[in-house]
Image (tube, rainbow, N blue to C red):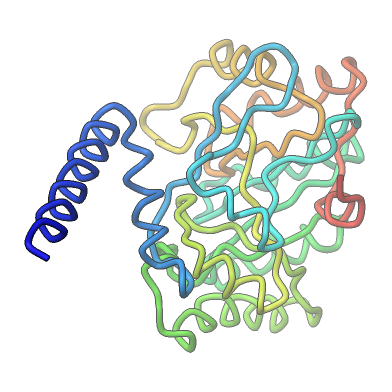
Length: 275
């Protein structure tokens, strides 16, 4: 018996050393191990959404250690065989540019998808009404812009989403489209499952760049080069509506996309035409 116990102890120690060595060389393994711990229930391990960018006109690869996202009505990209772009804006507050962006979208007859927090609806009802009237989707970005993976109480979780949809209905008289963007791209298996159970699609992205700092706006050329070089079929493009640069280049960017043969469509096209 002592020999068996000693052998088992040696095996465990050896496996621990091997795992430790692998984690040092591939930190993503730690996230995988954490997820396995919760395998009997929904994992509450928090992940940050990321993608591996490409500049060859092809779709980027998504996060690997959390590929369970595919099970929960979640999207980060559309059909690779369609030259379609899904233009999305995250709108946490108004900075005076949204109406000008809406003018550009109207000029091009191009639909966009705006993810708004509750306070944005309450503080900008006229803009919300205009978005809806002109055929854009106004979608849910949570009440408080907190990590949804940090909320385990189902009632609090639901309130983060339902309070936004209720505010939208009060302003427009209509139901809010059931598309949700997790704040800051933070998520867990639990949060995606909760969101899906509420009938919502979770929308991540296959392109984004640093455009949200008001005092550190990128130059026009930098922004355009970044956007153009990483455009690909089925792209879900994340921009921020508070960006001065985005406002000033939007007309030129959409014109460029049109000249390249791309069409802008709403998220309804994405979810109704699954790959």
